[in-house]
Length: 285
Ligand code: MN
Image (cartoon, rainbow, N blue to C red):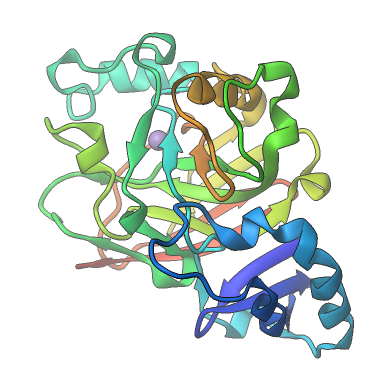
């Protein structure tokens, strides 16, 4: 199933470039009182919601996805986990680039582990990226993003894909400079997910997906997830050794080579096999 969030916080099923509004099914989630859960309630209760979503999809009339404002497909992730330099060619390019390798901070992922991006940085494709420091170098990083579907605590890699709900295209936008990654990559709108969540059953093997990113039609990044240093199952094993992963948590799996800067007015197009394509506009904040 392909799910998007669009317009005024609506939920849609996507089929053949059409969106079918299934927002009414969310009423079954009821209302939560303070303190609110720190995970995504729609993802955590999706199995329960799914029959009603399928029924509503069959009754709804599709409208073209092109006409809709696409929001982040995950409304309330508890964490945005991200893998630094997780492709060998990107490690080499990053180590050779003084603008990226400030203070020789770039090291292998096996040494440095993972980092977190603020959830407040998350936007959907139609919301675009707003550059807050346009005088500094702001780079695109195309990444496969996995969405966790159930609680994962110290999970072995061989079982890890059982915990994945689905996948999105991710952009881990980055301002280069000497500050900590978690700060530079957490600027409002610097985590883009879209255009929709595709459930794991429709994506298949996450270690064999082609991905590409263009800026204003110029090809910048082209890779396949088979070249990840730590595969998605290994990333889930690594992360869940340190903290419990909850439904809706996002894992940005790392970017391949070809990262480069964007300017206000640029248009990014990002695609991943079996997920689709998203178009993201860049502006100044
Ligand atoms: Mn990244």
